[in-house]
Image (tube, helix red, strand yellow):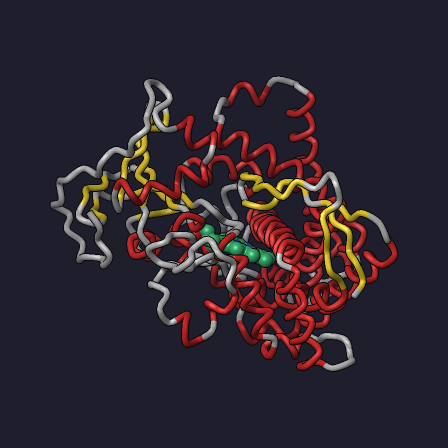
Length: 455
Ligand code: HEM
């Protein structure tokens, strides 16, 4: 059955969604989700618009059509909770914007939103441009094989930290943040797919390394907050907004909340942008003709001077390459929610407490929404063609009250970086590069080792 439109809510719906095929005794669908999650999630729509999955003893509801994922994201009946968020709480805390719900979440969004508003982005332009150009210089000096995982996460952390928490102290700390986050994200994904709580308390080297990175990140954030307070300055940035924020009674927010907020903003910012920069560099390596076209666009828009932030809105082809990369390689490839009431979705009953999952990866590659769905085609984002894309079939930043606050910030940053590096270099794989997808909390190429060849 295919339901393309969202029907009015019918809380009397009694039909149970079909169970997806391929479950095995005991593990249910868990083994397929662990073995090849992208392929598994991508074929679920053939089983129904909403399907039940058995993950061990648990039932999870998978939502498979663009319209219904939009309905979930926009409905107050579903909140942030479920396995993904439980695994993230050890890092993000319970009082940060990414994990809070209800009135706390609304207040926190109000605090952080001004730093991400469209009219706030140009102020970050010089830092974004400087960091993009610094990459080109670093790679010229390196003149060998580049470890793109490190390079991509490094630039993502530096841009987020320098723009949102202005101050020279970030230069020294960006590398430490980067190293800690790499360890933490790998460990958290493992904790999500293999949720064997006590096992992670055993003092194995991997657990010790995870705990060390977690402790170091918390120390770093405390240092950043303490430095800012000691300096007595109040630049117009996100950190000042957090330090000055008031709770619903008009009192300053607590230290724990400030701490959790800094982590809850820096962490998703670094991981998602880092993963997307990797995917973009893979795309430029595997489709050199795209890089040539970007170079031509940069030359016609910018001429001989360096690319600047003000050029971004005219670099439409480059932006379409970024958008198409986000379609085929969405860093946030899976999302989870929990129903807080007995409710209905696509004509099916969803019981209170049910966990839901859906996959932007599966939705954005669905042949029912996109012609030549697996092809990399930036021109599908030309206005005359993009109007045919079904609603919610392209939501890499999500929609609704949990929509990424940083969509404009990220698009500007990614377009600028892509323009600057593609103008300067072509790329080729070095022998030990492994571009297969690495599926963790985010989706990215596994290990990208590239040579940057000056144009
Ligand atoms: C390519 C870049 C990015 C992508 C694809 C992305 C994607 C997303 C998505 C899909 C969500 C919604 C999660 C959900 O619905 O459960 C989200 C939330 C969030 N993102 Fe991003 N993001 C990106 C960059 C950033 C950056 C640069 C920052 C900060 C510097 C950031 C901060 C956040 C925060 C704080 C939330 C939680 C919002 C809330 O729950 O109210 N993101 N992001």
